[in-house]
Length: 125
Image 1 (cartoon, rainbow, N blue to C red):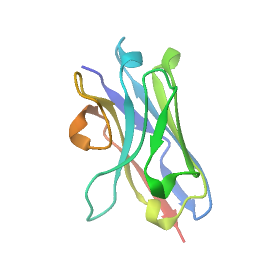
Image 2 (cartoon, rainbow, N blue to C red):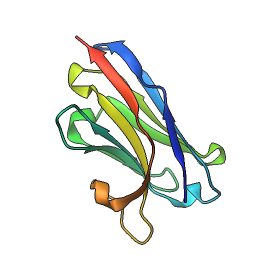
Image 3 (spheres, rainbow, N blue to C red):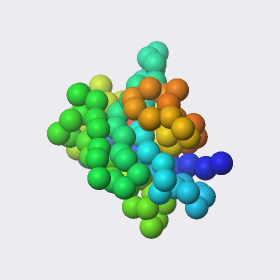
């Protein structure tokens, strides 16, 4: 089982930037699709971005396209989420997750197996 630890969250003003990191344990990190999700207060967990095992392809929810960038460093067992031009509506707890084995990991939480504990991102207006 892969263990995931997110970091890099915090309080930032609208228009600012943050970079989230997700460090994974385990030797099979490079074989997983990795995803970032978020949950705002009173809302369902929602997909933010995902990246293929090689890092060759990345996908984003429409509201973050052009502002967020997901990357990964398989040598460091780490996936990143660079967030620029942050908006108050980006405020949420952000989670990273590994795609579930035998499942094509897309944008549904049910397609992901291992989750981190989350890191809070708060964007003030």
